[in-house]
Image (cartoon, rainbow, N blue to C red; front, side):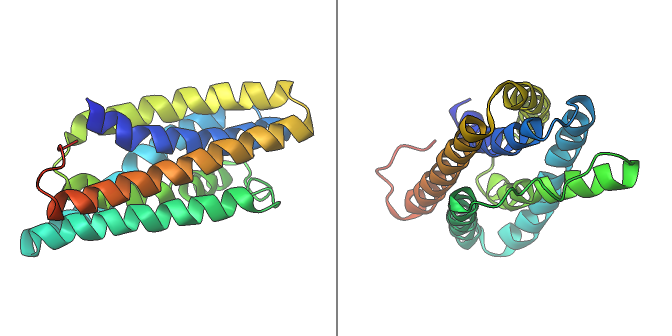
Length: 188
């Protein structure tokens, strides 16, 4: 259960950051929530396929590489959180095509998370269910929250969620890699 929480929580924080920004723009919640839940659930499967391919050949290396992927994802998330740009400005939910493109854009983190998820031998079904539920709920809550906040407070909330997501990705990645080299560490 702890592993599921550790993999899903940073994704929820990242989704929250985007959802608050969408709420500040006045975007309706249902279409983004459905798109994010669908794409954030499917994309880890692609990463998982990559992990299985590499993992069959290089078991220890796959976990270490998965940890490195999470650290790099954390650095990317931190960098995005520190920028003053609104990453949601180009996201549109007006048509099915634009909704699919927005869902794809927001789910690249989940693609990266799929790799270490498979290499760490996590319960894939439960994680995918948890990702789907958190993406849907967090998007609804984040958009509603963003609509009620002022622009300055909303931007700060979005930035804070992004910073915590980045730090959580980095910590999890470092721990997964360290687990392979320090057998005394408790397995998460």
